Image (cartoon, rainbow, N blue to C red; front, side, top):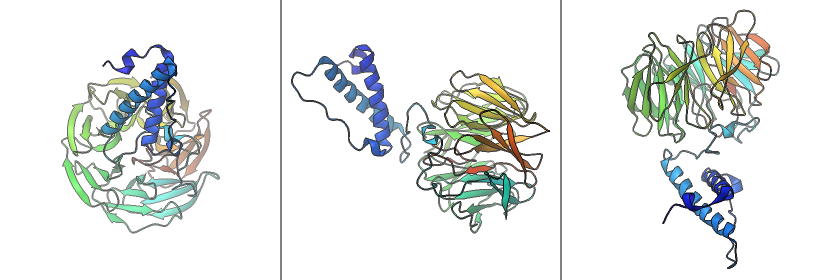
Length: 412
């Protein structure tokens, strides 16, 4: 029997299929609104349109089942199969984080501290002493803990974002950066100097498997829509890795087609089809198809392209150009740059995140000992907040989303 996708006539039936697939994927994510499905009429005289709708529903069920089967085991299904960031809409805080005070946590690599900023007043309200050379503040998969990555101190410092209490440091060697697999099972430590990807238990941080790599400077990553693989940048050898999540194995490796390339942040597009990799030396972002993992093309954005952040409406990618003090805006729909904001007064915008309401982009000023609050509607600099020395991977918290994939906050 031919597939209903091929034999169902008309636009109405095709729209029915798409709506049904989306609804079923939502149900797979345990969305309350999907608790009960509409019943099919059994009236003997039902119209051809009703028959088409029933066949479309059946086809959609099969398609949704196949899509769920492809997910990394234990991973929540996407809220919207066409938008990986659908859970990140303004103000959509999960029940876990809803009562957390809104703060900006800034790791100061040269001061061995974390500056805590109240985003309402743009003032530092607290300074926390942590381990040696903190690089990033990373939300845990379950959203309950902020992990400070003390790279040279070989520890992770836990902070309870509900009350600000600082826990006992956990011994973790060379934690330059930290990610979590989409099923919440493992943490993945980017051990840059150790030249390894270290899979650890997401809660105890016990080592499960250490995966040696042949590139230099593993630092940033992002995951495929089904969670089956992730792409890693290698800063000091100008390479990219493709890693099988379940097998904890490097399955692809390529050198970027530019002498001296220094890839940094990695981010996948909302539709899950395109990967963007910032490059400080190439002065732009590499545009990659993660599935084929073929040679990427370069899109120039600005000098010292470094951090990548998605707007709350999933339409825009903010690109911080550290070497020239600007932020470029890329349209996901067109794949082209739409604007460039220049920050006044000699700045070095680095890593950060978007406020929960989507109105402010927060970025650390790596070489200026300050943090920038940028209006996402106008590009105007709202505030520059003095912090410690060498501020790096700051985390805006809490943010919308069901779970965290790590770094300074990649939420799904």
